[in-house]
Amino acid sequence: MAPRPQFAVGTWRRRIINLVERANAIIRAVAQPSVTQIFLRVGLAIPFWRSGVNKWDGFLQLNDTAVFLFSSEFKLHLPGGPYAFPAPAAMAFASGSAEILLPILLVLGLATRLAAFGLLIMTIVIQFTVPDGWPIHVTWAAMALGLMAWGPGRVSLDHWLVPR
Image 1 (tube, rainbow, N blue to C red):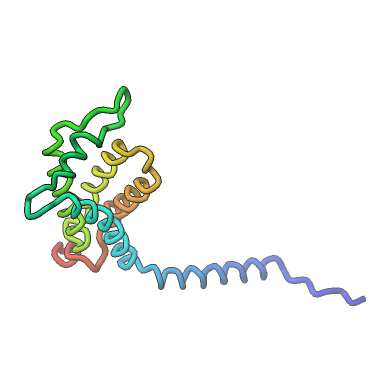
Image 2: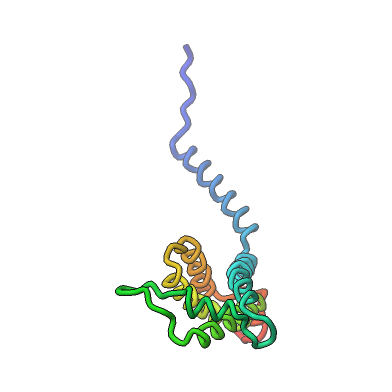
């Protein structure tokens, strides 16, 4: 029986490294940072926009359901609670306004870090209101933190308006 040729360990290691490097190059080509940041901006904007649109009957006119939810249904689940929201009409107005304005800013890429921070704060309040929703809330928080850390990307008004 003829001995089988043995490949050096270094040869296999090099092949694996080359394969991983080629795979990473393909992934980097597909997931360009600016494309990723657009998806983060739009993905975070959509649920808040949809919620905000449902709170309004017309220009600066909250619907009765939004005020009812903040006065009767929504509670802050804090230690010793749950507690009712303070000033429910004002909270409904602030929430509805932020859920319209901040997603628009995100999609445009204007004041992106500030808009993402606002949505992160809203996500935290939502988590205290709906504690069982943490799987989606942590996703929103991660998206907001990513935008706060890395900004809106090149395809944004922030990039074009702010000199580097």
